[in-house]
Amino acid sequence: MAASVLFDAPGPATRMRHRMYTAIASAGIIAAVVYAVVKLNNDGQFEYGLWEPFVTPDYLSALILDGLVDTVTMAVFAIIGAVVFGFLFGVAKMSDHAFIRWPAWVVVEFFRAMPVLLMMFFVFYMWFISVQGSFLWIDQRSGFFTVVIALTCYNGAVLAEVVRAGVNAVPKGQAEAAYAIGMRKTQVMTIILLPQAVKVMLPAIISQMVVALKDTSLGYAVAAPGLTRVGQSIYKEFHNQVPTAIVLAVLYVGLNLLLTLLATWIQRRFVGEKKIDVVSVAAGIDNDRGGPV
Amino acid sequence: MLDNLDEFFKGFGYTLALFLVCAVASLVLGTLLVAMRVGPIAVLRSLAAVYVSVVRNTPLVLIFIFFHFAAPIIGINFRWVQVHIGSYDFTSAFATAFVALSLYTACFVCEGLRSGVNAVPMGQAEAARAIGLPFSGVMTQVVLPQAIRASVPPVASALIAMLKNTSVAAIFFLAEATATMRGLTNDYSSQRIGIFLAFAIGYIVLVEIVSMISLTFERRWRIA
Image (cartoon, rainbow over all chains, first blue to last red; front, side, top):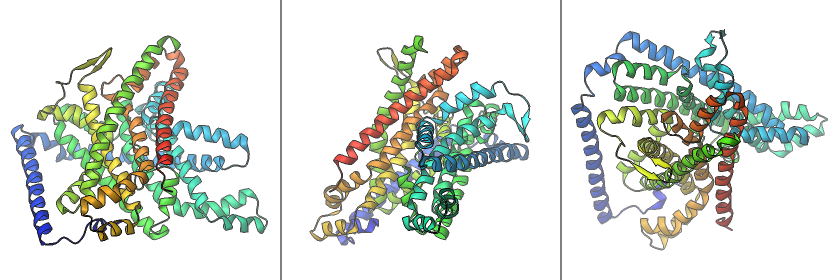
């Protein structure tokens, strides 16, 4: 419902009142901003020395290369794993055989209801504390794969629900027609249902990418690489906690807004306005962003 | 694991306490934000929109880092918080977690409530205006009661996410459940799997309780 339906077009007296409220609110906001700036200035937070690392090429390249790239790589690995996990368990949850359906249900519920951080600690202590060497180009001791595995399990469980809701959103007649021309269950699922479901699921998957991207910062707890760790080493060296927090926030918010734009574009291009709600709501995730972290 | 049941329950005691106070705070703040977002004052509308999209896109860890490491430097600290109830100490670690989590979750609560407002049929507000109700009347008598019913599921999922997010406080020196698990797995490394399962089940039980409460409300408040 558009906000404008909630109130009448204001008359002269109300317009006056609204102008007054606007003035008061603006004054309040401006006062708050000015206060914050003055306070930061008095504390010397705008001194060049504190911001210098962010204009020095060496630190900047560390921030972008080691930070941003590692963060994005972790998120990409995690989301690829999560999509595979989600499809496997989402389809398994819809199986006709109880001995496949119930274990899949247990696995999905287990990973969905558990904090990612708990999972991360567990994976770290069980496994990565003792491994050596590197996998592909990534040092296995760095915590990189701890983050990837934990995020794969969590986001995979969420995507399993998305897959299930997406398949259920495909009109029933599609499956019926496929059975009628003699397809097997596997064929119906892989040739008829999943391709149509994927289209509806795309925006939900991208929203989940935002969640994964934000959650990579939990790797802070297991000393995984990424923006948060680079930020940590910068503020430990320069004691510029406030500027670092601001710069990191800007980087994360920028990345996520880009992803959100992508999701909106895909939704318009492939889905249309309405249908996405079916999937997100049925999967129990918030409209445009998964609830979690 | 069985020998350390008291630590287990103490950890979850902190988790539960943090969850309860943050739930109240984020519900109140989220309601304020949504009132600003749908209200007639354009400045407040955009202020709330900016707040929600910035905070929602920032990782929770970063918000914790801000309040834990950055804010004390510019004079925002919670060292004055010294509440001791029984064997529980609510000090600056708890207060930091409370502030960070509430500010963060309020955004998701706001979005949940807003989707509820959007779910109310347009005719309801038009009819309310037609019988002469002002904005406050339209909101409190007609739209909000229906919006709150419709937004039970998304707000509940925001609160469930927040319950799981209390674990982030473990990194920042609060001895809640996840931190307790980390401690125990260090001390009893041979029983890691058992310890992990026990704590995972603890969280799952809490999550199920919250979602059961939300289901009850959803059923009771369902519009015929």
